[in-house]
Length: 209
Ligand code: PRP
Ligand code: URA
Image 1: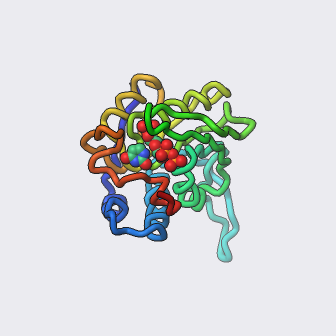
Image 2 (image 1 turned 90 degrees about the vertical axis):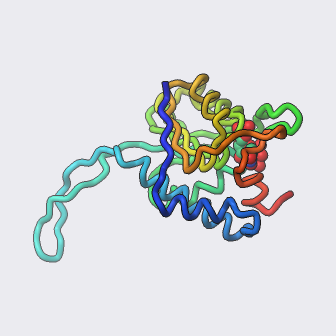
């Protein structure tokens, strides 16, 4: 069964408080979402293997560490997942980015696929599927299914805010996928929104309504 990690780092929790606030405007919401995504990526990549290299400093030869060729892929679920990409890529510029376009039908809450473009060597990469919101889990489950169908074997899911319903749905559908969160909230409301959540992440990121 996949594990669930909630990052309690004070910087993550502090920034999350601001994006939950309904009075936080689009510019600040976008900046903070990227900052939180970067901080979460910092934690998620702790396990990356290192190898020793020698570099010439201005003074002497130093034995140093470098990340040893691990190939990463970041898979934002469009649209709102895009709001996390810059923050992650600022730390991991060599990662490749694949896109999975899904929107949630407002009536059925089922994900509808409209775009998929993934790195060619997806089966060799460690993938992080990113989306600010994990509500019913329908979108995350579908995105993970899409990347698995194209050969992905090593997948993590990273979301800012989740409902218990979404976490359970992903654990059941994809027991091989660990889930990384900034917050695990109370529940879903009858419209499928996370409570207390932060509202519609895509609309808040892109100023739409
Ligand atoms: C939101 C969010 C997730 C999805 C979560 O996207 O960004 O992708 O809903 O809900 P679920 O867990 O019940 O599937 P939305 O469908 O609003 O599309 P958008 O990103 O284009 O705004
Ligand atoms: N999608 C969002 O953007 N917010 C929610 O609370 C649920 C789904």
